[in-house]
Image (tube, rainbow, N blue to C red):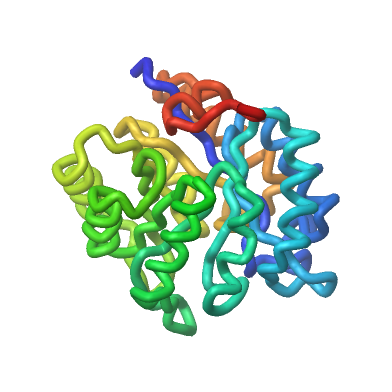
Length: 278
């Protein structure tokens, strides 16, 4: 398959700590360094969260601004995608960084269960986040935890309420949400292509399922997400030494599937994103 595969590295998230894996980058400086290594290994999208000084999750726009500045300086051309996820804040605070105009931001368009809580994405908040992304021309990556989220994403895009090209990520393996199931994965891909032909998509597998979803997605012509946010191990008994190591494993899967890895220029072309400074 000649189509380049975009690799997204989710560098930090809101959950893993250094007690879980010392390689998890917490400070802005650590995140920039870890992302630069992942960028050089083949990642073209950085999915970013920020943390407070004590390591707890934050949605502070000032911290996002420092991170964005550092990534633009040290990873020129890389697509920066900021998280509006619900673990980092509540209500409209989740979108407080959107005026910074990152290339992309995550957008969950519906609610679902997480391991110990309900991941709430009420319609009014989804509408507000979408309107902020439209106003600031931030292209969303739709995080689909359920089949209904695919339908909602397509409806929002067809109604002109989302900027840019539609890009959907299937998230599988979160406890109490959608399990890793090949028939469901295939149905997700088929459904998205039926509702919105030609739409680009990727997949994320949580924990031990990260490699499995990378393999399925790359083989099916989609794009791949890896990184310490979703998975802190290389294997059952081996911690991942870095985000770059997880990216390198994804690069090797691409090679085994005979798919080229997308450069940042190719990734921007595929997703319809302008080159930096344009």
